[in-house]
View (cartoon, helix red, strand yellow):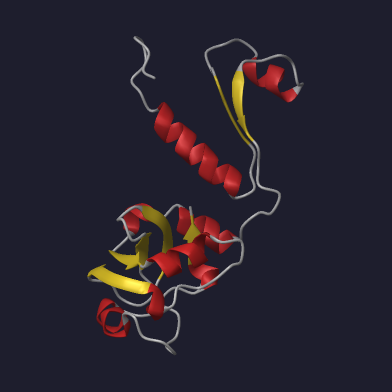
Length: 156
């Protein structure tokens, strides 16, 4: 919650910290106004802080870059329930046209797009293999190349 002396921002800090930890980097949020806070953290002393444990499997540098490119997104691709289930599963998958239900925005091949679930919630971000017109033409079709290849897809 908000304190009487803060300006907010803890939710944003927590989201970014979670994202970075998922990428394989440990993150600690602590009160930087306290004397010797960094020494206390470094030496494992009893310091009030929030520690985000890193994922044991780090993501590639390309996926790290993509995960922080949301502000550059040129469009959105909405997926159906089956594609959503596949993307959120344990196995790494690409986003195929058969799983796409809607394409919004004007983007070119290699642009960044948001990946939205069937209810309109953002579930990821990726670099597209085609432009918006080609993506719209391929909606729901089998046997087409991936709209977003796994190597360029970051699922939140």
